[in-house]
Length: 56
Image 1 (cartoon, rainbow, N blue to C red):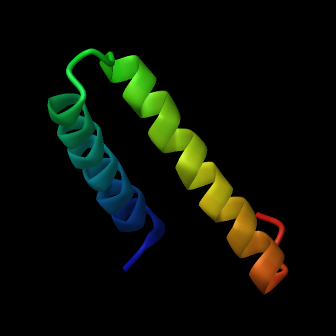
Image 2: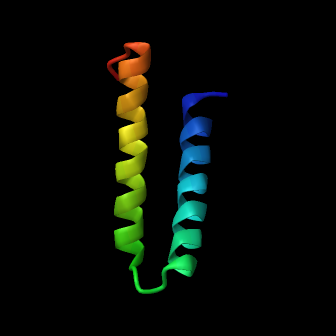
């Protein structure tokens, strides 16, 4: 799987996650949910970098 395919999979899963969150919490906007999801993903990326010693 190349980098473009991985990005595509990531974006599709992120969109699905945002849609599910908006349905669960209709008072939140898409922007709020997306911002929250991206923050969580960035934390996971940072954690992986610490765990595996990579820098991007």
